Image 1: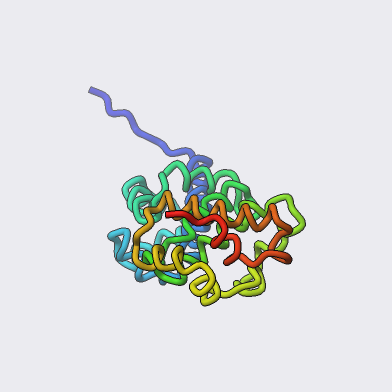
Image 2: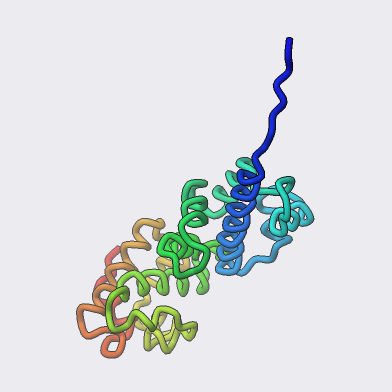
Length: 209
């Protein structure tokens, strides 16, 4: 019985290597948003730091992203493998719409439920969604939370105490939390924008348990 010799086309290897590098870019972007180190991320997806580093620095076909690793990454980030691959295939920078979409969806990674950092990231996420195409779109890239929303988390705590208490004590499931912030940010935009209406006002006016 004759034995068929398999041969891998160099072009296929190059394409796989290119895609693996793009996936690495997407994963690193999510890690950066989550504020986690390479060592921590490696532990979360169940590989050694050196193994993850080999994938990140892949120069040949031996250390590429494999399906089991991508499944672990998707599980940790609460997205699908398809989400990661599509973001990798359709853009190599944060200017890619699919990349930005994935970034927004993974913004909560690395934060604790009920924490100020999680609340801050969620507000930024919904602001970016509503600001798209408006005069405030450029504001979405600002890092200064208080400048962006004309209020601080302390003012949200004091001005909309029912919402803040429910958030910090875990009384809101993710769907209700998403809806509450989405409606509040929408209120701000419909009543003159953040230049006119501080975010805590929008939350106070729209939040109902």
